[in-house]
Length: 237
Image (cartoon, rainbow, N blue to C red; front, side, top):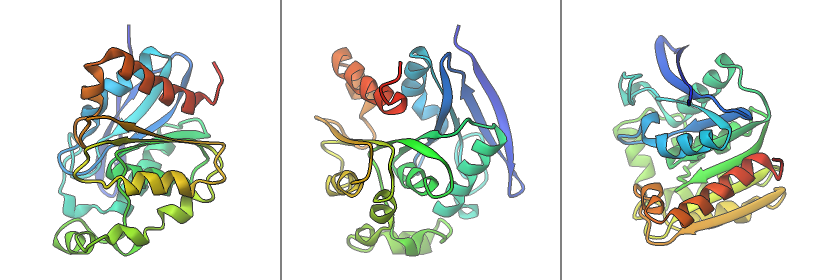
């Protein structure tokens, strides 16, 4: 029987709602969801499958999302990174961490490599941001910055990843109307010191429909999960 432990973490006067899909073999995955209407519950398919493979994960609802509540104006991209670090510390996740990030969460995952011991990064439909947007509260001012043409091109993500020496897996959607393929390609190219770096483009997938599409073809779904497991385990069984 799969065990899911609910918990919460105090942060800036709020309580971050989180859960731990308890793994049989490993429990060092920290999972950061995306923006918009995203929440931790949108990632149950992947986390549940990994749990069946023995890999446990912790995920939380960022401020302004899901059960944590609050407003997006109370948060920022930088705050999300600090929230993730607070959850990892409160739940005493064993390091080195394996950090997963989806969409905006991918940039948080990259940023976490600067403050945490991380030996595996799994970035899904990854978004990256210009440093000038990092501390700006979500709202009109943030939107104005990121909606500039190719605002992401001067992101510090490339420089940060150039120092990463762990394993990197970037999973992109072929028909992503939100994230141009140039971004995942540049992320993989930047990680030149990485122990391994893989770009997997899911054919026919869209930004918000990747894993559910893969699930329609079990062999493709299993192959993608195998890549994830290999990245986390680094060849260890």
